[in-house]
Each structure stands twice: as C-alpha cells, then as structure tokens.
Image (cartoon, rainbow, N blue to C red):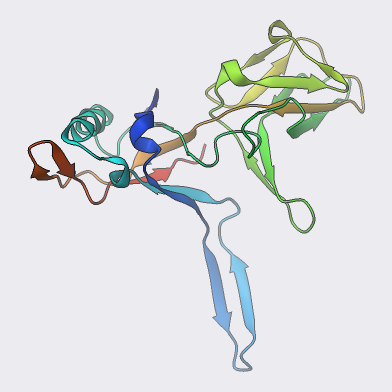
Length: 208
C-alpha cells in the first residue's frame, strides 16, 4: 500500500459527481424528540468518476490509471472542481485562512481550511497542497517564496524564522484531495465505436 503523488486526469475529474459525507446516528424517542450523535469528527469526501467519462479515449485513460493504482491498493490525488482552494472565489489571497499564531518559537504550521464562522465552524486539515500556489502572510507581511517551505505530502508549512508571539499566520493555496478507488473491478460497457459508458467508478477520501 502506498500513496502515488499523481493527479487523476483533470478533464475527467471535472465532469464527476460527489462531495463531503458525514455519519450521524439519530435516535427518535417515544416523545418524538430526537437525539443526534456525530460518529465522525471529520467529513469524508466521496466521488463518482464515471460521470466524467465521455468517450472511448476517456475510458482508456481511466483504465490505465486504475491498473497502475492496482484498484483500491494505492491512493492518488483528486481535484474537486468546486472545493480546491483556500477561497471559494476565483482568486486566492494570503489572507484567506488563519493557520496559526506565533509564540516566538514555533516555525511549523498545518494548512487548514475553515468552513463557516458564526455557529460551529469546521476546520479541515489540508494535507495535499499544490506547493507553487501557496501564499503565506505573517502579521501584516506577505512572505517571499524563499522564506518558507511547503511539504506537499502533509500540508505542513515551515517558516525560516519563528513568528513573534501574537503574530497571526495566514495562508492562501490550492489543494487536492487524497483518495483511492473504492472498487477493484471496472465494469465497462462499450456503447459505440467512439463512446464508452462506465456507470460507477466510486472514489473515497483517504484521511491522513
């Protein structure tokens, strides 16, 4: 078992379906009231890549990718067409996400993305950033690329110099989702000479 730092074909991924999944237990009491319990602390994204396949050529690309991953064995990178950056807008900014606060000693900070603000914000750990897109700001100063390093395998940012106590560290970035195939069998139907129909190619997020 390994993780292959290679992205699923982007043009096919952008035609796929999927999003975050949570697991909640709900018990209905005799009075009709409910008790709800969240079993997963973090959401887990699932996708169906089959919707992105439009041609025989697409099918061949996915077949090759599937075989190299050995089905469910090896993980890989997936680009979520809706949620792939620190901001939902087109342009990322170094002000997008707060990732930590300086104490005068610490130099490493985990990239995160926060969803919501007013009631119960959810903080998602980002483990597969696109290194060349990462922007870092310490206090009021945006850092140059040579003032920090990005670990693309963990999402950890290492600053050359520890921020002073109380300084806020912010970041902007693009990222991929670590996933694996959730099947070991591709059920392929050739619909025409230049067409293919693969109804179900489920993918599931690998939590790291």
